[in-house]
Image 1 (tube, rainbow, N blue to C red):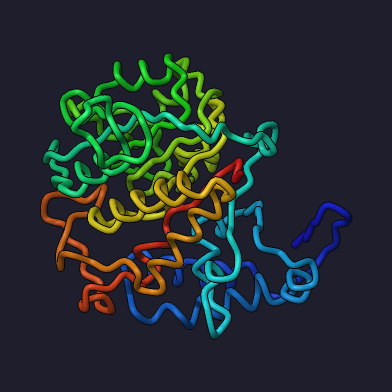
Image 2: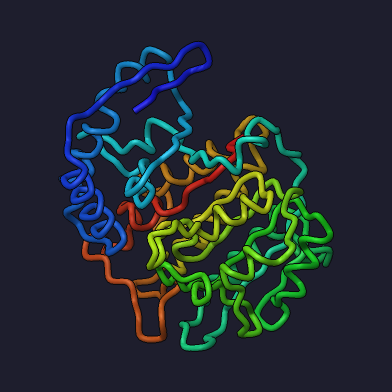
Length: 349
C-alpha cells in the first residue's frame, strides 16, 4: 500500500495471499450485509492487515481524515467498519473514497448555502416493498416554500411517488440544483447495465445503461445522495469488463461527490441516518461532508440514535423481504449493518 501526506509518500506492506485476503473480505462483507453478530473476527484481522502497517504513521501525522483509493475486492467493504480491538475505524478516522473521475474537483469547496431537490418512493411498486420511512426522511431534509413547512433543513423541492419521474430528475439536473437526494429502491444485477436500475416513483426504471448513455451533465452537483441499496457496488460482466457502480457513473457525469451504499439498507434506519447527516452538516459550518457523515456513524455506534420498529423493508427488497438482525433485537443500531454501508465518493470537503 502507498501512504501519502502532503509532504511525502512511502510504501507499507502486509504479507497475505490474494486468495486469503479475498476470503476474509467476502466473509466480512457477508456478515455485515446480513447483520450477523460474529463479524468482529474478520473486522480485526482486516484492520491488522490494512491499518496495522500504517497505524504509527497515522498517529505521527495526526491523521483525522483519510482518502483511500481501493482496488479489487477491497471496494466491497467499508473500511470504517474495521475494528482495532477497542473501537471501530469510524470512531478514529473519517474515510472517503477516491476515484479518478473526482480528481479534478477534489479540492473545490462547496457552497455552504445549499438548495436541494429530493425525490423518493414510498409505495409498493413492481414487486418492491413500500418504503414508509421515505416520506419522513424527505420532509425532514427539505424545507419547501410552504410557510407551514418548518421541519426541513435545506430549502428546496420534494417529488414523491408519481411526481418522481425521469422528467423531474432531468429538470433538477437542468436547473443546476447543487444537491439531489434520491430515496428509492435500486436493483443491482451484477454484470448487467440493462437490468440494474433505480426505481422511479411512476414505476419507470432509470437503468445504469441510461445513466451512462444519456446526456446528463452533473457538474453543478456538490452532492448526489443515493439513499438506496447497493448504489456503490461495481461488478464485472461476462467478458470480465469492469462495470461501474451507479455512484461512480454519476461522478463520471460530473458530480463532485456522491453518497452511496454497499448493500441493501434498512428503510427506517436509513431515513434517520440521512436526516441527521444533513442537519449536522448544515448546522456546523466548520465541518466537511465526510466529518458530518462520521458524526452520524458515531451516533449510531454510541446508541444516540435508536430504532422505533422491529421489522422493516430494505431499499431494494421485495414484498416478502424483511431485515432480521440477531444482534439488534433490543431496538439498537450498533451493528455496522445500519451505519457502515454509506460511503462518500469524491470531494469530501
